[in-house]
Amino acid sequence: MALLTFIGAIQQVTGSCYLIETRDGTKVLLECGMRQGRREDEAHNSEAFAFDPLSLDAVVLSHAHIDHSGLLPRLAAKGYRGPIFATSATCELLELMLMDAAHIQEKDAEWESRWRARLGKPAVKPLYTAVDAERALGLRRAVEYGEPMEVARGVTVTFHDAGHILGSAIVEMEVHDHNLTRRLVFSGDLGNTCSPLMRDPTPLSEADVVLMESTYGDRDHRCTPDTLDELAEILAQAQRDGGNVLIPAFSVGRTQDLLFYLGQFYQQGRLPQQAVFLDSPMAIKANAIYQRFHEHFDPKDRELLRQNGVSRIEDWLPILRCTPEPEDSMAINRIESGAIIIAGSGMCNGGRIVHHLKHNLWRKECHIVFPGFQARGTLGRAIVDGAPTVRVLRQRVAVKAQVHTLGGFSAHAGQSQLLDWVKHFDHRPELYLVHGEVEKMKVLQQALHDRLQWTANIPEPGEQIAL
Ligand SMILES: [Zn+2]
Image (cartoon, rainbow, N blue to C red; front, top):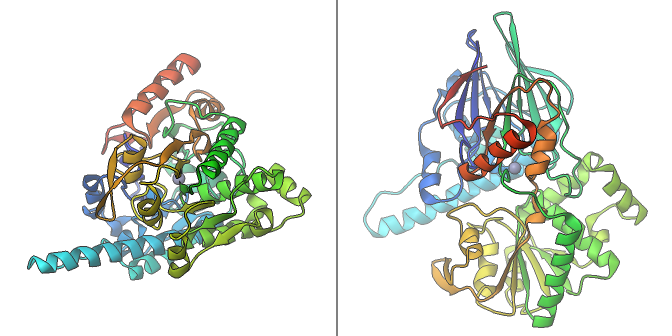
C-alpha cells in the first residue's frame, strides 16, 4: 500500500505539506507551504525538509497562497528540479507570491545582518533568494480544471475548483500501487459559498481517503448581507468621526472581494469616502491576473458586472486609486480623513499596512477593519485581542482606533459549508482533518459525529497512514 505522511498544517493553519509514496518508489509532494505566525513557528521554515528533495518525482499545489506554496523556492534551492503541477491561474499568481516572498526573505536577512554586524556577529543568509524563486517558477506545469494528468508514475491528479481564490483547487489524486487503486481527495482551502467572484467548491462523491481543511471548523460565518451592512455602517461612522479606514487584506483573494463590495457600495451610493487606496503592488498585479481569468468567476457576478456595463474594476469603483510606487504610498500618510486604505499583509506582520497602522492606530477617530483570520503571534491578532499598545516598526503605539472584525468576508468555508461539501462523498471515506487549530478541529469533529454520524481523525505531525 502507498503511504501518506502528514508533514505540515497539522493541528495548525500554516505550512501545508503532505507526502505520498508508493511501494514502487514514486514520491509526490502535495503542497510545500511556509509556516507563518510566531517567530518560533517561522523558525521551522529553515529546518531540513522531512524528505529528500532530490527523491521527489513531482510536486502538486492546490493554490498560490504562501502557506501552501512558500517553501517551493527552498525546495528548488535544495536541488529539486522536477515538475510543479498547478492550475494555470495558480501558476500565474505563484510568480507574484514567490517573488514577493523572496524579496521579504532577502530584506529581512539584510536587516538582521546589519544589526548583527554592529554586535560583531556574522551575517545571516536569507531563507531563499529571488534566484531560488525564479528557479522554482521555471518548474511550473499548468493543468486545467477537470483534466486528469499523470504527474508521476502511477499517480494521476485532477484539479477541481475549490472556490477559495482564483485558480484554487481541490486535488483529486488516484494512486495506483501494485494493482491497487486508491483515491485521495485533498480539499485544499475550500471557499466560502457567500463570497463573491469565485464559484462554489466542487462537490465530489468518490474517495477512499479525504483530507479536509478546518480553518473555521468551529463556526459559521455571518451571512454576507449582514456583514455588508455592518461594513457600510463602519464606513459611515468613520466618515462622521473624521478618520480613515484601514483594511489589512491578503493581496490575492480578499482584496478582490473587497473591491467588488466597495464597488457595489459606490454604485448604490453607499460609499461616503472620497478615495479608496489600494496600496499594495502585489494586489494591483493580482487584480490584473483576476481580470485575465474572469471566465473563472461565478456566473452571477459576471452577469452583475455585465449589466452595469463594466469590464474593469476601475469602472466599477471609479474612486479607486492604485499606488504601486513608494512615493505615492508615503503620500497617503498625509491624509487624515476620508480615505479607505487597503494594504497587505493581511495579518499585519509586514507590508505597507504596518506604516499605515503607525500613522492611524493611535487616532481614536480612525477605524481598523479586519476582514480575515488573524493567526496567533501576528500583530493583527494582538490588535484584535485588544492589546492596549502594540509594537509597530520597532515603536510602541497605543491602540486607540476602533477595531472591527468582519468574519463574513472569509475566503474559507464555515462549519456548515464544510459539512455540506464533505457529505457528498459516498460510503464515508476515511476522513482526516488538517489545516486548522486543534480546538477548532475538535468542534468540527464533534459536528461531523453529531450531524453526519461520521468519525473524523485528527492526525499528529509526522503521522503516517496507509492509503
Ligand atoms: Zn489559502
